[in-house]
Image 1 (tube, one colour):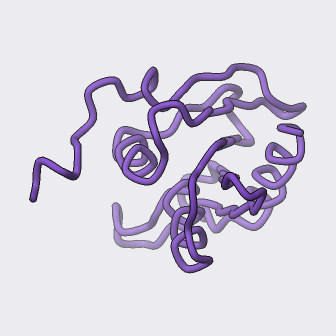
Image 2 (image 1 turned 135 degrees about the horizontal axis):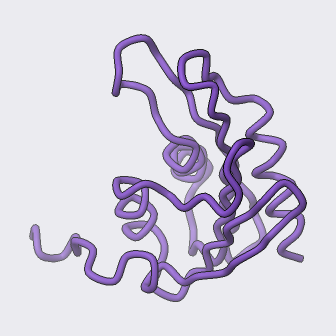
Length: 130
């Protein structure tokens, strides 16, 4: 079942807008009820004002009603086994629980699996801001 999440991330990557870095990235998020939200990186001339594929996918997730995130897949055209950047790790951790699976992919599919707790063990917690 996880392969379809990779395919969603790969398909999203094909829609990226990366005219400056020429580094396409795609991400896909699955919720507990099976919905998939995908996104690609989008660059603008005013660095660093673009946004990452994970951020785009989270935007679609929020606008689609959210839910419990169970799985996340990330793929890059020029780098196998890419991981989310630090900012995206924090963003994902705020919406996904520590047990949500993060799939790192190459051009053929999933090559490594982490949990959000493993990829961001000491992330900021939103409840500390209340």
